[in-house]
Image 1 (cartoon, rainbow, N blue to C red):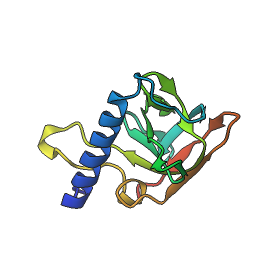
Image 2: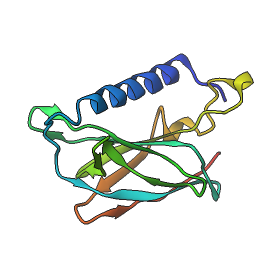
Image 3: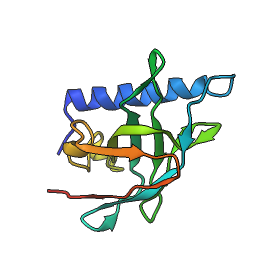
Image 4: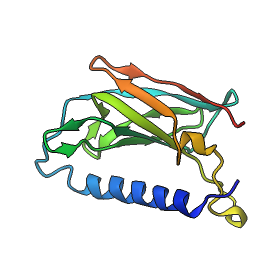
Length: 142
């Protein structure tokens, strides 16, 4: 399954927004209340290694949306979200969750290894609570 132009555009925009939002994090930016979020991502029961997990807040604070939090899964599929370079966790409330895993093979550059229902057209959601959160995702390849 290859990424469509819209999928590539979504990934590029999400990555740029995350990177630019992280550039302003350490200079007195008001950080909302955060909670630790960790878990394990599997696909068909096996750990999903080196996948990008992004929690996009669906609620606003003041006049602006909250920043997305993200992580990269480890060898065992585990992840721990970071809000920015200085703060871990995610803002409280409801989030849309996006999981992206591209092939490492240069011959298949841009090939998405996770079905679009988990990224470009994500159906995943999570509710981040104040007392810490373990949120696992067991994805199905079909």
